[in-house]
Amino acid sequence: MNNEENEGNHNQDINLLIGTGGSRSILFGTGVLLVLAQANFRRFRSITGVSGGSIPAALVSANADVTHLLAQVLDTDFNQLVVRRVSLVKFLTQALREPKAVDPPPLEGALDAALMGQYFDDRIKDWPSLFCTVALSHQAKVIFTKDGVWHEQQDGTLLKVAAKPIPIGMAVRATCAVPILLDPVAWKSDSGEEHLLIDGGLGPEGRCPISVPQSLFAMENSYLVVVNVGEDKSTLHQLIDKVYGIISHDRESLRMDGITLADNHDRIVISPPAPLYGSFKFSMTRREKWQMIMSGYMSAVEALEKHGLLSNEALTQARNRGVKALLLLAGRNRHYFKDSLPPELDGLFVDLKFAEDKLSHTATAASVSPALVESSAAR
Image (cartoon, rainbow, N blue to C red; front, side, top):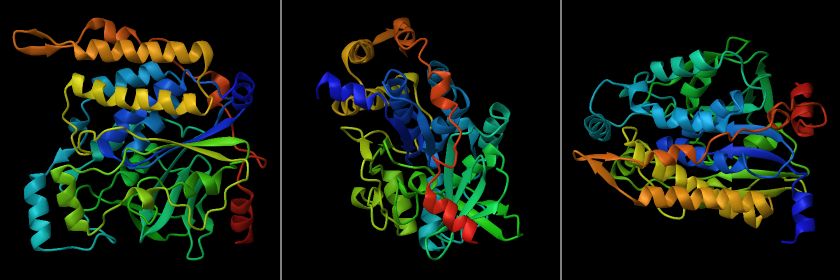
């Protein structure tokens, strides 16, 4: 791709979608954001996160400092944000013996995520203008935005059912509410209709429901950057799949059936080159976190270079940071049998943040999907 083409891509907007995947989405998505902070594009139109992907999406939407996001995910023990009521394996084995409906879900799961909701409510007081997430109610999408809540109707259109956003912690809990494992989130629309909300990645589109940003934000002259961490083949997740009877494959996660994209829209899919840790591995060492973050980082460097969003000096600097980080991770310093990381590692990604104008874009009549405006107004 020549420099002239690259300059044209620098004027493109980005709609970002970080798909489901538990801890894999949190860390791999953080690595992608570290690269996007060094990339050349005009601004974000939307930042959508699904299930575990909602965590980095919400945090970066509220704070443009990606170096701060990196510190947050490295320092936060996400295992402490859920309270285990029973052993997961024991709970799932019992569920196999006595199958229960997934949607509507059982009212109580193996894990209580109230602390996770509080974590976000304490840090994000106002709904970020570009952040969007999705949960499911009877397999229909319920989409949460700064401008309110949208509910997918039987004909596929979106109806606005709440004029104001719900608390950010409630939305994150809802999109992460894996049935049987985590409690569903009870919510009422403005009309009083009751919903039990579950994980937004369990619908027909799978891990990466691209129809969400497609429905809410215009795609013209933009890239849709999709972070898809792929299928989880861990033993625990395979057991969960057996319980649900739901197995999402890549061909389903990014299928485009019934979705009309703008002619000049392009899609960039960023996926790991090799299997990562399991989605529900939340108790991780700092080294393990770094390994997953760097998987996202290096995958993003390759993808964004290919599409001309990283070039010249920015590309060289981003690649050098990645190579240095991998070399530091390859070395192992053990003091008294405790694995320690070189202190230089944390200093490689300082002062990475999005310019204010890249995150301050507010949806207008020109940027909101016309189909959404028409369908909601008609009702």
